[in-house]
Length: 321
Image (cartoon, rainbow, N blue to C red; front, top):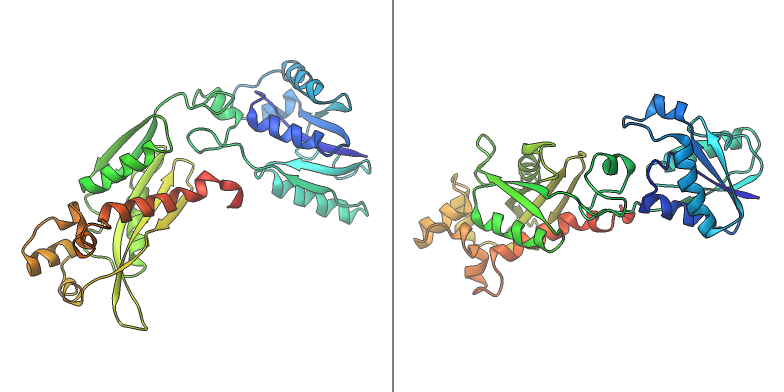
């Protein structure tokens, strides 16, 4: 019996090696489908690397793992995986997993036993995007996933505290970044309530579209607790990347004094309400109301950092998402 795995293997990067190692790890004879030059002419956007060159690199790596393998030309997305009775397992990436499900549907319709699907998680590069041949060929990363240029990040705000929090957080997960901020004219700028907070954060995040690797929007909003009637303040962070994926996170919440809430309801934002009641301006750009209430044991920057951390969490370990 055999395990099948297929691909272009244009540049044998870390992600490819994980797929092939998983196939060998089944302990079965491994059949590697290698896409033909004719297939690449139809479906790939980048300049193709000739079949013989890809075959040579593939054989060299496979031979370092096992002698029990063979390579077959692949001129379609499924090859003979829907008709062959010799295969028992198929190794796929998250991207090709849906294709494996369809293969099993076709096999079942033909009276063949379904394949055991082994899904190997993406290998993530330094910029938290998957390692793939297109990105390597375009010069974004090397085959090991090292980023070859600064990671470009935009944040839609003129609040220096938010910018500082983003700078501090991303410096802990990325090696080299450039950060751009602006005031986001034309977007909502008063005080959101409830799930408006998520909507406003998202609008800020997508402001820069695909112009940057990541675009970040951060909003704080008031959420009413129906059991007590009090309002809690939560920070919401939305992260939009150049591939169109959005992830979100929220901070812990704290109860806002009733006097501030009632003043906000007259049309003010939280900082203006605090200034009207207590006579201090720009509290939102400093420790925040939470800092004053908590006597700086917790500050607004802490809450912003928490929302950032939670928004990036699905990107740090994407196999769970």
